[in-house]
Length: 257
Image (cartoon, rainbow, N blue to C red):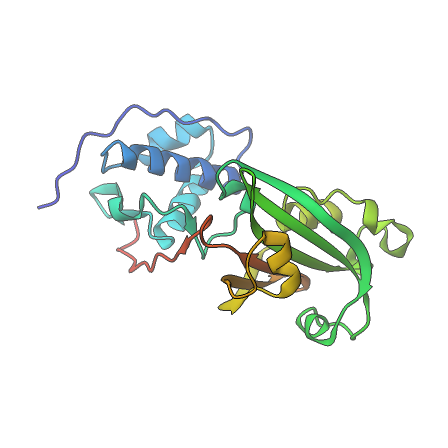
């Protein structure tokens, strides 16, 4: 028989609006904190909704997302339980998150930001003719004083607000691909499709990350897609797993409440 500790008093920062993304983020923080304390059961939906200041449907959607990520279990008639073995997962490869939110003592440096012709592979991913002008944003994310992640974003100039009349090289790109798309393309990324493989760091990446040429890294190649199914950006990231190790939670869903 499953036992659990009593539901604790809720200490979670309320969100400013009925915003699904904010609710999901706050719930992740709450699950991590309570799980680390040894608590196994979340408060009721009514208590959580009141604490966050959001509607029950928004809360349920966020809880379902955490269930699909494998962070919680929802058992009809019994409550919502924390999956304690998933509490320590820092970076879930299936989740969309900025590297600044995943690294310890994070900072970011924009190494280069310029307009280039998009090559055939990137153009095919973006469903555009080869040679289209694209904004290339090269970033290096640091963990403390050490470079940990190298990324290159490629965004078609034609999709930027204002089109070719803007100066793409001057647009603020200091945080993440997701914020850049939301700010400068007018709508957020809906989902991303990623190819993951270990590779030897290319020479320019090895230099940026201060790694020997023989050092393997994790290569993530994302195509970012908006709600209308339009691909709007490609990101190629090389990750030094000494500083950021990804996990994947494979969830076998419980009955839905």
